[in-house]
Image 1 (tube, rainbow, N blue to C red):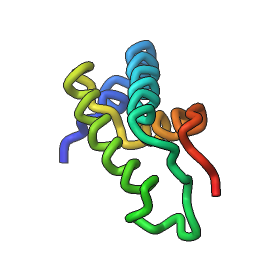
Image 2: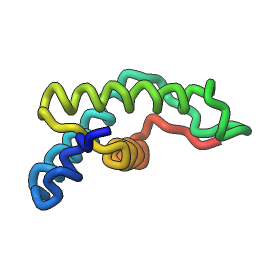
Image 3: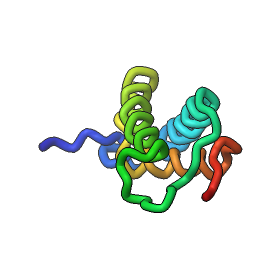
Image 4: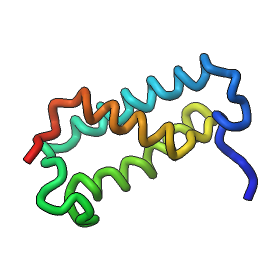
Length: 97
């Protein structure tokens, strides 16, 4: 399998990586606005049908497509995950049980 992630192919291009990550964080914040308040992890954090877990999977896929389409940039899974959880931390849409 070929390496595709821009972060790995050009690690010294920190300006581009930071710009893409900032935009991904904004992207996630905007997507969260489309949903009512979401409960974080109920009794079972590994319940893959829980709303938070379904939202995570869907938004990861959409964000990866958005990034490639808008930036012509292939974000690594770690970048997507980090930006997603930064946005969760800043958002008022999430409620803890």
